[in-house]
Amino acid sequence: MRNRFQINASALQRPAPRMPRRFRNRGWALLGAGLACSWAGLAGAQTLRLGPFDMTLAGRVDFAYDSNVDGSYPAEARDDVVQDDFYWMPSLTLQSSSVAMQPSTTMSLSSGIAYQDYLRRNELDTMLYFAGVNIQRSHPRLTLSGVGRIDYSVDSMEDQYRPGGITRDPTLTQTANGAAVWNYRRLSLNAGANFTRERHDFEEYQIADKDETSYQAGARFAAFSWGSLFYTWERTMTTMIMTGEETDDTSESFGVSGAIPLELLRRPQVTYSFGYSREQKVTEDSTDDTGWEMTHTVTVSDQIEFSKTTRLTGTASWVNDVTPDDEDQITFQYNLNLSQQLGPRAQHALTFTHEPRPTFGSTVDTETRTYGYSLGIRDVFVYGLTFSYGVTYDESTPLTRGSLTEKTLSHNTGLSHSRQFSRKLSRTLSYQYTWEDSNFQSGDPMEKHLVVYGLSYVF
View (cartoon, rainbow, N blue to C red):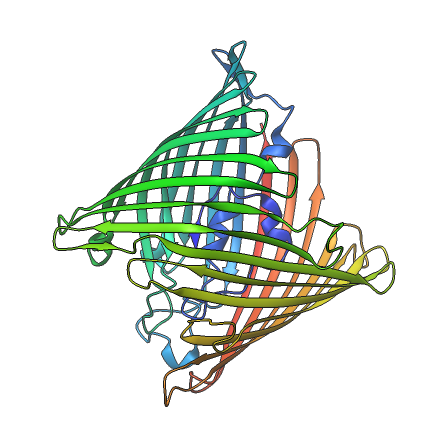
């Protein structure tokens, strides 16, 4: 879960998505909302002119109280640090409009900086920044694009558990990529290249420092009204800085993709892709090659409208893929969603997602089941006040003999109010309550209160 602070400020006006079981700290998620103004809101405003670029400068400051900074259960909380704290976070963004450099070429620039300062947990004080440039050139049939970006952000390590709940991984990421797309009647060709440089601050994570270069190419031909022929090729070369290990991974696939025509099957809607795929992975010690194997992807979806306000939708997907490590990797998953509009300002929904035990040849090693309910109400009592509530219940059962089922229940409740004081100044006040309990945790459940007061100004 990468916290990028150029995220739209509306993230403060709705409950954050449910936190991963191994990382329950939402304080860092607010770093993403730190730079308040969305680019859509900045359109049309101009703070300064830099050469041909009309630049818009926006600032924001957040004042917050977090009752559970580490997002930890009471039984695993660290005794040597306080769990509740206040912090404030000032931030600035500078965004340019898209500028025509030539009749067919446009360019835009963006940058930002934010600093989160805790009152007592000074070890969590963090400065984030980003800068980027985007160039695009368009011709009647050819489109060229290029992006360069530098980003210093904090990752929440979802796949690593540590007593106390929180793991932080400040990382500097530099990327550069270019792409070309050519279209002529039914034929489409594309090619691209991407370079990523990743460096971690903390020694414990520097094992993941890497340089990665990838190349892609593909073609698609709309041979039929119901589908297209396709070919894709991708090569990724990775160098791990700490170990010096080099990996060269090449994959190819070709086949047919499309949808069953409505005149043959009006419902449900069925989309598919089938063909042949091959993947070759080369390291210093070995070479793994799947050879050409048949692959399939089938997705079935449908919806039933019981009334103008009540709708049931459902999807099911079956994927058969190949990898150098597993020559027959099959997944099957389906989900249902029952939603209802409660008047002009409220709606609620029930959701169910299931990845069952081996079904239709599925090779998954864990059965998962998720039940959910959500409720959203806007303009509660006063204009601009939004209420939201969500509850989820997860079951995760490894399919190995003797494994226990992990059962997790979580509640998320939020209130937020936004007000526009003037054309340039706005305010957001939000409250978020999180409660989570798991049968894998002893003692009391995890609770978290988060209150944020934010001011945004477009210069």
